[in-house]
Image (tube, rainbow, N blue to C red):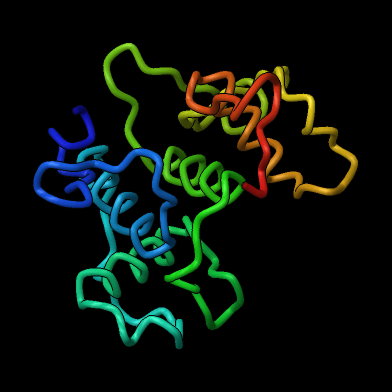
Length: 171
């Protein structure tokens, strides 16, 4: 209801949300730019960012993909591809949300911590490194930025297990 109210999602039809469906990368770009708008983030103009595989998408989708590239929320699947039809993994979702939160303005009762050290700039994140996920071992099978993002989102109450104590980043 909340993300519908704020226009972040429009649903799969006028009366359906389809919460069990997978989310494609083009849909994620739309969610992120819509969330950015209501979160106090200034979006870029959406000019071409060099992705060669988005020309078949609508102008709205192309703009959203280019805007999240401008914000540094995505780097693409390669330097020149975004892979708009691919599904977003939980790992990618954590990175997208974590990177967007670094740009967002904290709301009432929100939580910020210092970007580094004990003074200076703050951002929405959690420096706590604890988590309940038994499949996040830090053995190098997952990028450090991803591991940090998942831990931060867990401590902020955003990331939840798929079942038991599993995060399943590749799912």
